[in-house]
Image (cartoon, rainbow over all chains, first blue to last red; front, side, top):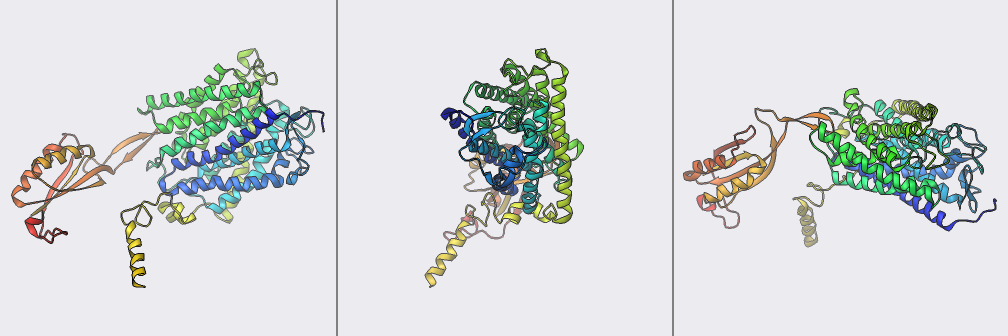
Length: 446
Length: 112
């Protein structure tokens, strides 16, 4: 046990930040749920909640240990913390000892694992078997997220670069809060899963517009709010770096909204609410790796670039004919790559001495090269493992619901519920009184 | 007695309602409808992708009238609903054999 005292301020902030990041998973559920058609809103939201349940249990069992165990190699941790043994009463140690409880760090990192898996669900809307999703989520977290989190987020035990650090962390890839491990990772998996799963019935012919844009905006708002925990919480303390990350998160997102809306107004003629919500999320994704390494003006550039580039990227699926239903690829994969590579230009040690100087601050091309290696490695690994895993599931338990169930609605077929009981079978419709009348007659007769 | 049915552009509903009131029509039924005519819908751009929307939203109005005023009612609807552009809709009339007011049991013209 190192000779330091617990910081009440740091502990309070990290615990609060962890709760903020938890809120992002319901945020994703609303964001994606509103974007689906009404007949599949529940299935979409349920996939996020199933991920929350599964990943949390796995995290305690062995996930945290595979990601942050100190006895492993550059590729994966070990099982020394399986069941979270030996962590109660300890300080958090990750490339240095932080004056916060180890469990606060464990919970903060858990929320990242949960939301990364939940983010993938956007590419499989309306058509994936719930059991197949559950098995996929559990195996993907184990084979992809836990190791990749180790690559990027594990800086070793009590000293920087100490035993068991991840290989991308050792290489010096700058990723403050998870542009690679969370967003590129989820985006690449979403692309692979969408390709193996196949297109929805009617893709590219019928509009499949969002059924509830207020839900989408609610979800984007929860994400925006929770993202302050995600980015500023990654400072693991209530300090100046957290304030930098907080500021950059705010301003980049503002610029992202403007960038996306500008593209839509010029290209389509209308600035849409879905565009505003998507622009905010794209910018949040892009600023995630960069939030503690750039100046606020750099954050505005990154946010605006993400909003503009992602607004074009979401139309790729129509040209390339893969059904990434809710734009996990266009927003998270592309946004994550934009943020990671932008650090090669905009990173500055004047903000964070643990960072680097990018090309615009007198640095050389190696910074950009290292960022590209980090982004490319995570993208390739996630994509390949996901394709293999999805193909195995496709040819064993099947990935898709039947075409009939997909057309009539996955909610009723899979969950025996519908998001909105407005028709004759439910409580709100014009025929609602008929059932009650029958009950009353029965009571009178008896 | 006649049943006059009109399919019109939704934003013309208020104009048609006041025109019918001006003709002394005391009741009508309105429902949301969708469909297409000769122009076969239109194309829309959303999130950078172009779609053909073949079912266009419309409003359906149904009015029961006495034979004597039927043609005047049709004229009133047409002039109120007309914009001169494609998709203005249709109006048609069919004969009705019987009409009953449920509350009183009145039949025929008295029930209108």
